[in-house]
Length: 151
Image 1 (cartoon, rainbow, N blue to C red):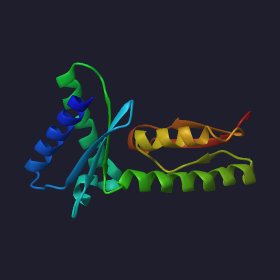
Image 2 (image 1 turned 30 degrees about the vertical axis):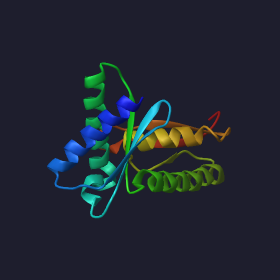
Image 3 (image 1 turned 90 degrees about the vertical axis):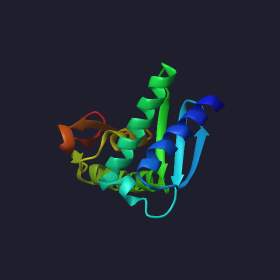
């Protein structure tokens, strides 16, 4: 596992050097997942609109690692705590939407989200026995619909 951490650190530094940035970098083995934690100033361009650049960087690093290892490893990249704070915001939003579903006894569509965020929503909603979630829409308009179970 130390080898995988070293490969990820090297590949991340290589990419970031081309972008002329040298932030603090840490690779953490979380069991099934390797988390690349990047911290520094003026890194918002690496996060991009709604985390799109961050997700691209994550995909690129995972592809580079998996090609070198010839096996699949799950890689997560977080920059300046963006994903943790975004996840908290999404959980707050889900709670509000669940309240709407219960109050109005009607399906509620959440705003469009990327695949990572929709996955968080589905996992979070699974903790509510009376609510179900499903994805609807296409491409950038793909969103989660919350419903009362049994409707």
